[in-house]
Amino acid sequence: MPIDLDTVRAFVHVAEQGGFTRAAAKLGVPKARVSQQVQRLEADVGARLLHRTTRAVRLTPDGETFLARARPLLLEAEELSGLFAADEALAGRVRVDLPVGLARNAVIPRLPELLARHPRLELQLSTTDRLVDVVREGFDAVVRVAKLRDSGLVALRLGELELVNCAAASYLRARGIPRTLQDLDDHTLVNYAADLGSGVPEFEYHDGHRHRVHPMRAAITVNNADAFSAACDAGLGIVQVPRTGVAERLASGALVEVLPRHRAAPLPVFLLHPHGRRVPRRVRAVLDWLEQILRAHLRRFGRARPAASRSSVPASR
View 1 (cartoon, helix red, strand yellow):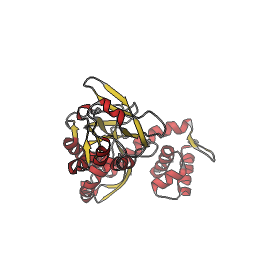
View 2 (cartoon, rainbow, N blue to C red):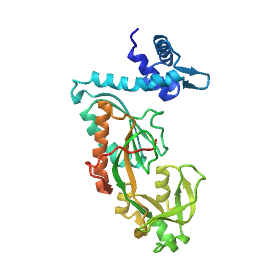
View 3 (tube, rainbow, N blue to C red):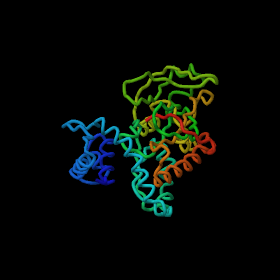
View 4 (tube, rainbow, N blue to C red):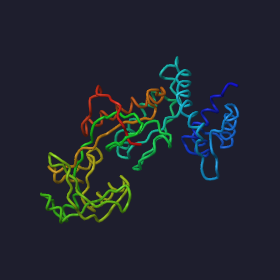
């Protein structure tokens, strides 16, 4: 019996999302319909593909085998359906995750250009400081500002973001301007920690040879980029941030750079995706656009790696 691609697509979404509710939400259809499609697929192939309980859904061994073959099948079908379509006909949903600062300062202001070029694209844009699970949460493209760990994602290194040390002018008028690392003992740091309560507040710097830290006292610890910026503006201490996020306030004098010879090492910027060599056309359009926009941004506020130096590297999810 021929297998219906819609039932295969439903199964793949359930497997990737870890449940029928999330899969239905991503597909934009009722949960009952997704359940029926998966049951029909299991009947068609003559095998149980999912273990279902009231708390979780997980793949059976047959389901693992089927999923490995189903993903490239769906990508191939998608490529065939759009093989002769013009670029203007690109349509469908593309799910992207970006750091808050890059989304606000670099990407969102330029989005009207992309959507004017491809008006049938539907972007779902996540801006969070949380490290998302690219595959399980169904992202098509992710930008990481960090060193990467090993995984199966494809990553393109775009360049580096320059970091600066700065504080509110009001804070420095009250506390004085630190001229040496030892002066930091009389100052406070706005501490950033993804997990509140973890780690020790430290002023990071690079001595020209290696990474070093100077322990400091923190009056406040935050786990969100906007809160980090607001705490600095409120005069709660020194921050170490990408120049891109504070350039205007530095130019206006609201913030003042301190200890410029003791900056932390630049942060690498990567563009990642989970599609391997078979990237859907709508996703490729967004990836290429993000690369162009972010390289231009890094040339202005950091160091952009030449576009010719493309490479696939292990990457963090």
